[in-house]
Image (cartoon, rainbow, N blue to C red):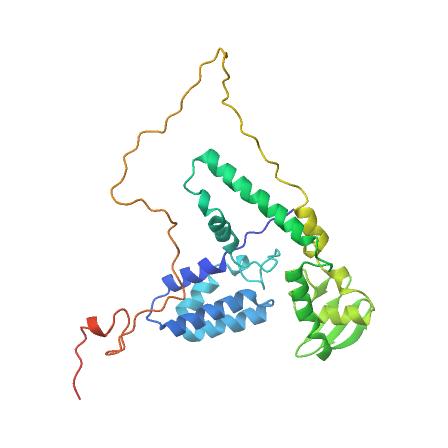
Length: 298
């Protein structure tokens, strides 16, 4: 099985804004990041190129940076694996926040605290999924329904064999047997795109049969079918009467640094943070009260 390494869009966009020179306004930076995300989500090379050309109109340096940042690792148009709607590593950040109560505990208590949280999570998700009556999980049902709403405006033509031509805003070719559509959405997400759903409907088949098994309610329930078993308190390893002497392990000698110790992680740069703008000279990085710019009076 081949594993492909995908880059996190959030950190890439932050690095892009740090590395690109030039004084860009907050609005221009926001548009640049939006185009960058659009380029990453574009399913085809043509769509990717349209988005990066928009960035090129803002900054040639930013365009060159993007083209040299190995899009094969972060752009849907070139990524060889499947990211299943995950384009960032935010789930790692969420897990870190989820177990924040255990950060300052000694290692044994930390493991016990995390184990207890995982135990409760597995139980709650298993219990919640019992009430699901659809074949897909609720979030995937919603995504499939959005694609299904687009079908009414599409026209399906038989191309030959198992290949079909679907006409709408664009003309796409669909191969049902290989789960392939030229729009690339089906291959990238694991859910049939609107073009595929249109063809599947013409064939009198069920779109659910063409969804990735990872999105099914049954697979979700199997994921949480096993429990984390509780562990009772274990007495000291050396019981009374043992011939071996207990060894007390003490922490290494350290010197406490001056100042108050930090308790939070060092956060990354905030892309959306607005710079101060002076209402007097319209410059950035300061306000009117600290402005030192000499202005000629009219």
